[in-house]
Image 1: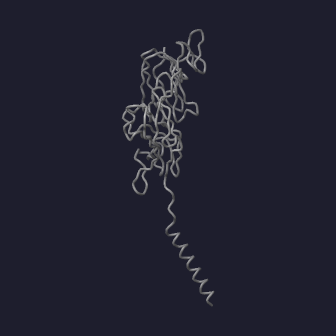
Image 2: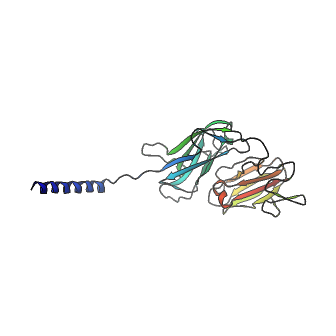
Image 3: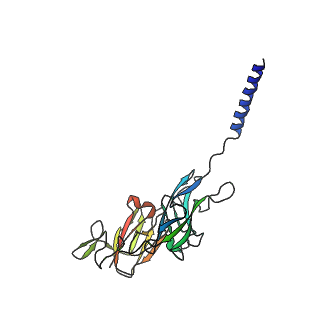
Length: 273
């Protein structure tokens, strides 16, 4: 008889636990972001010709998309980069150093008062409306590392001009510099940024010209000089309708790319003569 009573009590206890779990289900884990490299307190290479530090990261329980493309979906947004708080924000007026939707993302140290030295780099999750994603305590969901930047050294950078002649990646045909992929460059100072291409992808301009890139599509893009290019520039995140201007003051062949879409061939070239 005692065994029957204990069995009945145990059964009732199981029912109570099951009911409690149904009424109070376990809370799902919230969004998170983690920087995977560089390591905290790492030394990184950066100078005036190569000011961008690539930051690799992982995200959980959050969907990353280009700014303005979440269409109201919950837990959807992008990553914003901050260097030394807001001291190194994009000088064009954007409320961050850089923004993107894929890893790696770059931190532009050229926006800081000095490139070399110690910097604190933070990646934050942000909603489609640019507001920060916060946890249950109200804290912004972020990951932060400290790095020490130092110059990459001298030499002729890849994509630069050596000995006053041909640039790496370009071709010389009868004294005329051609595009890296062959063919003649287009003489223009306007480049369209859309459909994951720069159009024209290869242009030529006189020294002193200002080139304007215009994002005529929806996804976020950047216009960023290649590592080791003879000049350095970075538009930051360009939304739909956004423009970026850069003046080329010396001759050379300048390769550039879109940071989040370089891997799928979104690259361009400016030949300055």
